Length: 208
Image (tube, rainbow, N blue to C red; front, side, top):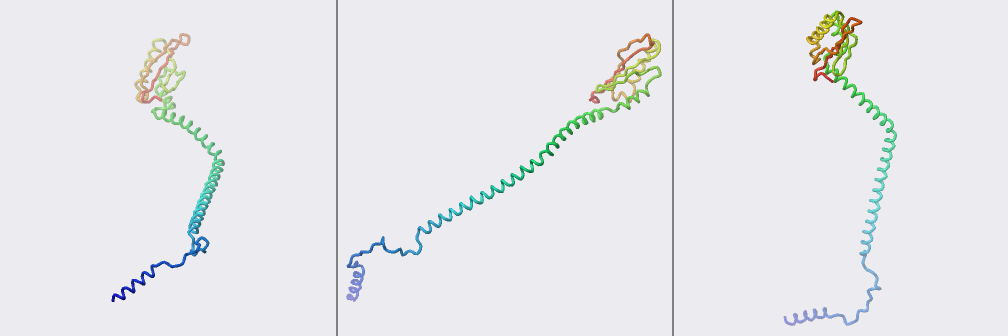
């Protein structure tokens, strides 16, 4: 048994003992036994990165070219539509100016419960026989009736005052006019008549 152990240990020592001759091999000049070198992978990775960058740049340029083309088309369309647009803007501004006028007129008409033609008709219906109209002026603030009363001094004065009172008491007119006053009374001796003015002022809610 001891002899077997001794033989095995001798064999192990013989295996571990280095070769007796010197290693004269020059590894620098020996052929490369690697199937694929590390530099191949490095170069391949660099090539892939370069190709990827080129593709990215090419795609970006393609996208930019599409955007430039669309922008040019839009600019051409804007140039074609600009005259019509400027004309439409000018018409719209003109329409706005006219709309302001129409709105003001509508507000004025809506604010009055009697229009000029109806006002004249009502005056003719209420006018006494001895009163003659010279002018009837219809303004934003009210109306002014210029006329004269025929007859001698006292009769003409009484007729003018009575007509003033008649206008004040008229139910159709006093809903529109705040006040009715007799003014500028003067005697025309040569013509034998009394000149007068009757001023009718709108209610604040009915004024323009």
